[in-house]
Length: 246
Image 1 (spheres, rainbow, N blue to C red):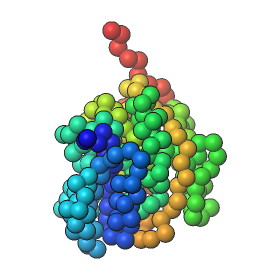
Image 2 (cartoon, one colour):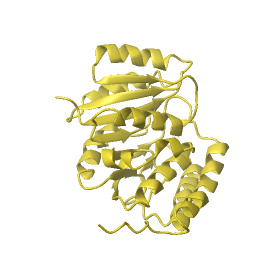
Image 3 (cartoon, helix red, strand yellow):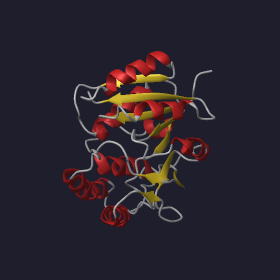
């Protein structure tokens, strides 16, 4: 039986994390396929992903020529998914900051929503291994996005999400130019402002223990300016556009 769920995992130098992550995903109580989108990792992550794909037919690999940002990697993965018949597409980090055990909850919630966001701040703060400065920055960013765009979500910069196929089809992925946190905000806003259903579930976020974070000042500033562009694109509205009557 073909899996209805695809998990998209972008990688760059995740050789140590990838095998145990694939093992956890394939051991879930519901069948999933996995797409590894590798940005030509110099540590050999892409070659290791090919080896795992040879062992497990549920694993697929998309190789990109160079490191081009998280947003570009997800766009490539989503277009790959839309060319196939998956009903639900999960996006998650490849460093175990996102617990694979939450995936069944995402899929259950997505039965009644077009986009499900895993929130670090719904019903309390659930973040492990972050310095206070970064936690304050993330909470401030969430408030900043809500204030400007009006999106009623507690964690607009979160990167653990589940899309229904219809939500992916509602976005023109070739028009997405942002990366990092701003990519997460832009995609959610494009779906929300069309009146599609956005839900949140609480998750526990554990910052990476292996490897190096891809966070940078450029990513932060991109997010600062992106929300104003989204507000303008939405006609200076802080609510979804009215849907045309039948």
